[in-house]
Structures are given as structure tokens and as C-alpha cells.
Length: 171
Length: 160
Image (cartoon, rainbow over all chains, first blue to last red):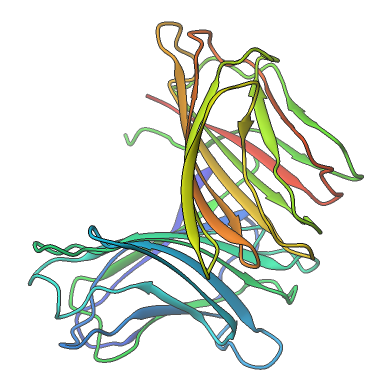
């Protein structure tokens, strides 16, 4: 089988960081599949950091295409410390709804290639506006990825938020 | 038992620059195909694809693009190939393309795919494609740019 589950983390409402550490370096690609919500009552995002920090030497460019149901938008952030705004799913959306996300990292274990991330996410909201996001993000450095962190910008992840990490193999 | 997915079929990692990439003899034992390609492209470009070496005017496309400062969309009708991805950026960048081809081995319907692609420096894009042929897909050709050494191409199958 070429797609293998590595691990699943499900929160109990007591954490604002979901941290995948010691990622095995034996796959070709990583795929994160998530169902998430943060408990903030304001419009707070969920974002992702790589190898623990997006500090100096790991500047990230994020490019977005966003549809809300009533309008479209595009944006770019450069020299960022994180993969920003992968999902907006918080207390402003309908209660008990969770957003969905898939984040694909090809060639994550390479020590010679810059890293690129392909992200799709949707927020759930039983109202007139709900977002779908398409993103491509890139890091210019070539360090292999050994950990990734999903972070709630404010307040903790809602209990039941779940992320599963899969690895793709070439055999 | 869960249905297996993303079953590895074949991989190519280019050791030198190539002007085309060919995937041939695709087994007909899956329902869908997943094609994941990364290209360390160094200039603006528009890689394209054909199926089964068909050069007829049989390819259709709708697309949306986000560039960061503007966005757009459109369609291509009755073309001799389909766009696989696109970047307007002139410079070093890593292009990622994820293509899901539906019911590729069927012989009673036109073939469709959904593509998600882009580069962090250039654009993020979504395409929907149709090949106006009921033939099963047995080969894929990528062309229209120089694919640099280091380009990776991975084909997987999904069981129905």
C-alpha cells in the first residue's frame, strides 16, 4: 500500500498547539487530513509552522485564492514565519461545526530541495458565508522536515479537533 | 478491510533536463489515477498534457487562478492539449501539481480530471479538464516546457 497512516492526534480542548514531532523520514510525501475548530469567539485563524519555528532562514511565502460564497479574493504573504491562515473555523461559525483541511508536502525529507506545500481547506457555516481556500506555500531553505505544528491563533482547539498524518511511499 | 488507496504505480525523477515526460503502459486495474508532480522551475511557464498521444482538438478546460494581487478565470475549448499548470513568475520556484483523473480505465465516458497546482512565488490554481474521448487512458505525456533535472513524477492508483 502506498498511503500509510503515521499518526492521529485528537484534542480534548486543552491545547492550542497540535505538534507532530519526530516525523519518520522514510516516505516520499506527507499528507495531513484535519477536522478542526478553535474556540475563539473572534475571527481567529489556524496556522502551521515547520520544524518548530519560522524564524530567520525559514521565510515562507503563502499565496491564496479564497471563495466565500459571495465573493472571491486573492492574497500573498512573503517572508512569513508560518503557513498563515490555513483555516478560519472558530466561534464565529455555527456551533458544533468543524472545518476541513488537507495539507500535502511532497519530497518533505529531501535535504537538497526547497519545500512546497499544497493546501485546500473549507470552513463550515450554516449561514451566507463559508470559505474555501486554495493555497500554495513555499520555503526557500532545503532542510528536511522533521516536525510540523498546527497552532490556534487564539484560545485552544475545540475538543474533538483531529489531525491524521499519512505518508506516501514509492513502493 | 479498508479499500486501499494511492497505490504506487510508477515514479520518475529526472536526472537531466527533458522537454517531455512520458508515462506509458498504465495498468487498467484501478478506478482513478493520482498524478503528483513537482517541478523546480526557473522561469514562467505552462506545462501541458495529452492523453494517449491524441493531438486532435479534444481537450477542454475551465480554471481559476489567484496571483496574490489579482485573480481570474476562464476556459479553453477544443484544444489539442490541456494546461497542466502555469506560473507567471520568472525566477526560482517549486511548482506542485496534483491531478486526480476519474474513471480513467472506463470505455463508456469522456475522461475528466481535477487539478490543484501552483507555486508560492507565482499563483495558486484550480482546473477542471475534460478529454472528449471514451478511450481508456493508457499513456500520459507532459510537455511544453523544459522539465529540469530534479523534477519528480509519481503516479498512483485508486481502487473502486
